[in-house]
Image (cartoon, rainbow, N blue to C red; front, side, top):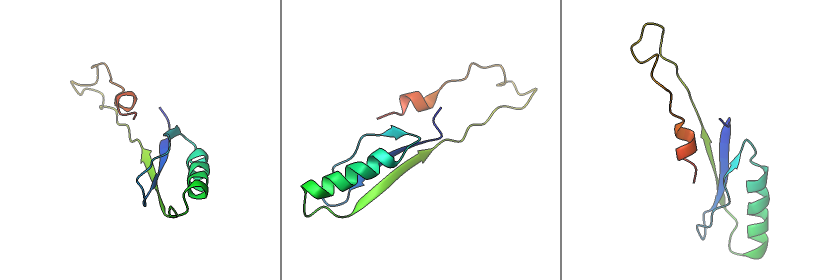
Amino acid sequence: MPDAIYSMECMTCGAVSEVTDNDAGPGQYWSLSHAGRNSDCRVFKLHTETYWQTEPACGNPHANVKRREPWSEARR
């Protein structure tokens, strides 16, 4: 499971960078490149998703249920 996933969104035209695991650098590079190609595009939003995982306590009836990995389904 990644610690976080990142993407950048242009607030002018709505273009979005690719989503990357654990590294905001590619999105930052994308925003600079996008601004260089589009003179009106100067404001970007960084999207960051982090994950919080819990485990059932011993004795909980759900403790032996097979765990799903929802983060693999949530990828864009």
